[in-house]
Structures are given as C-alpha cells and as structure tokens.
Image (cartoon, rainbow, N blue to C red):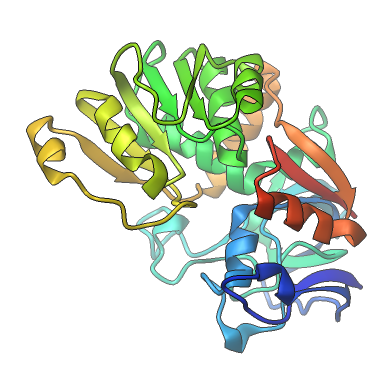
Length: 322
C-alpha cells in the first residue's frame, strides 16, 4: 500500500527523512481492526516526529500521521481516535495512562491507505461531516475542545486569549470558543492571519506581544517561549494558562514571582479522550461549526504539505486525501 514514512530523523532538516512509497499492509493484533483511510490531516506532531521528538530511531521506518477518517471492516464511516492507551491505567482517562502513545510513535500511523487501530478507538463519523472535515478532529480539534471545555474552568462569556492564530489548534480554539459563547481574542504576527481570525469568529485580533485593552480570564497557549511572557502578563489575577504545545521552544522564563503573586494557574493539556472526541462530533453537528481546511492535497503530494507547515504558510488544517 502507498504510505508516507519517516525513514530517518533530522533535527534541523526534518523533510530529509520523509519517504513516499510502498509499505506492507498493517498487522492486526487481537482486539484491533483496520480502517481504509479516506482522509488524514497533518499536524506539527508529524514534523516533530521527523526531528526525533517522540519517535525513536529504533522504531523506524514509521508511517507518520495521527488523524484519519475512513471506513472500517464492517463498512461503517468512522473517525480514528489516535491515543493508544488503557483508560483503567489512567484512572478512567487513557491520556493519563503512563504507557500511552499516539499513532506514529510506537504504532504505524495514518498516512497510508490502511491503518490498524484498537476497536475501541473508532468513533462514528456523523454524516453531516465530510471525510476531510472529520480527519481534522482527532488531534488539533480534540486538543482545543479539551483545553476550552475541560481544562480552562471558564463559563460562557469569559474572555479567552488564543496565542498564534493560524495553526490547527489555534483556529479550532477560535471557532469552538466563538460557538460556545466565549469572548475570543487572538494574536498573530501577520495581518492576514489576524484578519482571518476575525472572520473565523474572534472578537478582536492583535499583533503578537501587543498590549491588550484588558486582562483576560484564560490564555490558550500552544506557542511556548515566544509568547509565554505575554501570556502571563495578559492574565487577570487568578487567571489560568492552558498549555498544550510549545512550537517556539519549551523553556521560557517561568516568572514565578508573577505566578505566585497574582495566584495564576498553569495547566497542561494533551489530546483528549475517546468520549471527548465523540462529544466534539456532536458539538459540531449541533452548532454547525466546521474545521477550517487550509488545503486538501492527495497523499502522493504530502511533501508539499509538510513543506508548507514547516514554513508556517498555513491557516487551519492541511488535509491529505487517500
């Protein structure tokens, strides 16, 4: 079958390890099944994997990709939940299982004609969502859903700052937050992305690092070092940062004096549970909110999608059709 595979790791030039071509069809352990992939979405996780973050040399070659929507062996249209973990080991939450992993870390990923997954990882795809839209959900949109509705502790009407408008998680945060009744502010370095954030539902958009007209109740942080200080300064006393990524660096100055004096909270968030993915699909069908797709490319042109993400030339999700 055709697949997009990591065959070597290169921290500085990740695309050097990207190989497109034939791979064996997936092996199917007991309790697992296969999904014929119709669409799959690109994430920063895939670029980090090529840099050797979360993917080890001894696991190469590894088919990349976490997200997929397709058809299972019984002919059902499904969405793949990409967290491979045991809810019991995580106290009812598979994302807290110490042995959890994502597809494309220890198990072959979704950038292929077929992918093998545990049966419990399949979520019914609503007919209202296209395969391309559904493929955007399991990583970026699920991450955003959990940040906003599980980790933030906020009520509708609260003011939320989304750093780095343009990425898959950030655009999902803006769209979901707007649909749920939050007042959403966003930042971006580029005027074009700020304009698109407003079109997406943000109430206001600012240059990265700009002084805001007021303090916010929570900050949704995926950027890391480049925006961390601004995130802390933007919070009201008692406010909260929910952090799910650090694309610009993972060791910003902690500014602990600001954290303790203003009684700020910093909460980590990673992906979401299978049940949250199912609730996310219901939220989208009920509200009419849909993922923002930057472009759809055939899987055979995956290198172009990786290059665009590597250069930051993306607003929303890059989706590969299979």
